[in-house]
Each structure stands twice: as C-alpha cells, then as structure tokens.
Image (cartoon, rainbow, N blue to C red; front, side):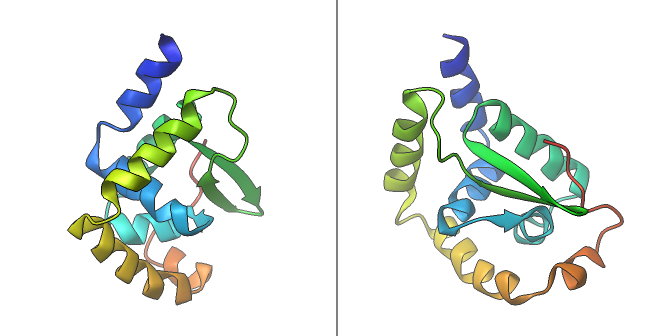
Length: 125
C-alpha cells in the first residue's frame, strides 16, 4: 500500500509529471529540468525527491552535476505500469508537447550555460 501511495502522490502534481515526461526522452541534468519547468532549484529538488522516493526516477552524479532518468530497474511491479500509463495518457497533451519542443533547445545548451542562471545546480536525491 505504501509504495502505491508514493507513486500516486508523485503523479499528483503537474510539475512532477512534466519532469517525468521530459525524462521519457532520456537522461537530463537537474539544470535542464530547472530550465524546462521554470521553477526555483529548491522547488525542483523537492519534486525530484518525491519522484525518486516513489522509485519512478533514478539518479547519478557526475562531478557537481546530478542527472535524472526514468527508472530502468523496477523495484516494484507497478512502477513500469505507472510510467507506461503516464506516457500513454499524456502522449497528445498540449503542455507535454510544448515541453518537448522547448526541451530540444534546452538539450542544446551546455551545463555551464544552464547553471549560470542558478547558484546551485546540485539537487539531492
């Protein structure tokens, strides 16, 4: 029950769902997520921590940068189902499509350029 509630909580916020759908295209640096969502680093940190606690995303560190990706190894049987449902339900959503277009430009920016906007790109998982 606890795992199910963590997943439903994680999927109950538009910003978290937008971040999760952006990760469907591959791994992103936290600075890229901040730029895409247009939120403060601390707010993105909280959102990503909730997604991580629900085991919907995985993290890795590379120096001072933190990267997120959709969970590949499902610790819980319902994680792949939840991710598939979100992708299927939101495939034609206007906001998700807008984010995908914006993400193309964000992916072209260097980490350093993105991080110049923010004091702290390091988000704790």
